[in-house]
Length: 412
Image (cartoon, rainbow, N blue to C red; front, side, top):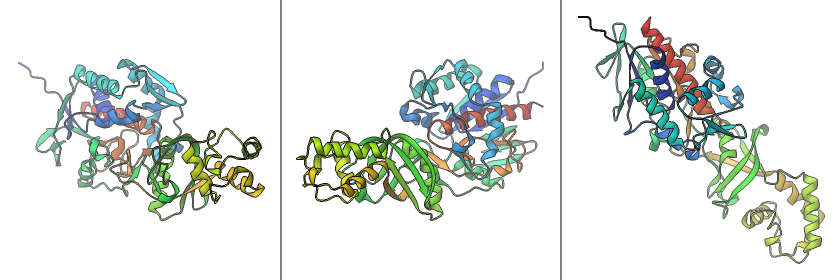
């Protein structure tokens, strides 16, 4: 009697890249797939993504939204498993999508629905997911690999990065790959809150403001983002800030000067605002400066804007403002400067900037050039994206490419 022994693939990490990797590996190949996850359950970061709504991807998948020493490394993965392929992939899992601007979410707006769909497909395909199991050793054994003494024909390291340790962030992926001779870049927090002089935001904590946030590094304009800004007691947060945080973090690590300007009246030009301010004086000359901008802005934001513009005291009446002061106020509302002194820690970050250098991997397969049969994908590598679904798209694309390549490698 013949006994068919299936080739065995191990995937370390049951996050976005690991689960998509497992599905892709099993869909096209008759192999045994086991996923090891150190946490109590799979996909904890998926559950938290997109503020619980899971920003799956983005219609605008331009390379400029990604960062790393060799961001062009990601192009083959995106060519094979890009936007259209990703949307088709989730449709086969029963997850249609909806759009908000260029951002793409599951139609249900539920991160849990995405995770459930991935888990159900893994179960249907016979993928074995073992939780509360952290792989600590990887050793070459003949044509395959021993993971804590268990033999596998190939291994995919999809452990993710060190950010958000409360949600499963870990150094284990870096450690395993470094044992095989790989090197990593400096690890920095990304998609993270930016810290300013607390006096600039004192009293504004918890207030949300639509704005155009512009990033300047060493006095040079880098990029802007129009979205919601959340004032916190130590600085700035919210989607508009997260979009710029990766570049801000890297610049601060190099000791470069970083500042953000906020246009908190983006619908109006400078001339529009100046005329509006002049009319407010005509209509209500008696109003105190404390309430001069109320109605246009949140009362506390208006008061802080005037203080930042050097307008004092706020007990003055509106009709005491002179032409120079009005221009100063209008200018600040269009370009309110916040000097960035630091960023929050890895504990607060959603993504890790930096990781294992991609130069030692084949971009067409995600296989290590130093250890045949070892693959890597997702956040453990030195590729990170801006806020807006870019990091999840990298996870889906690189995970699926690694899964297909690893399964093909051991099926030859």
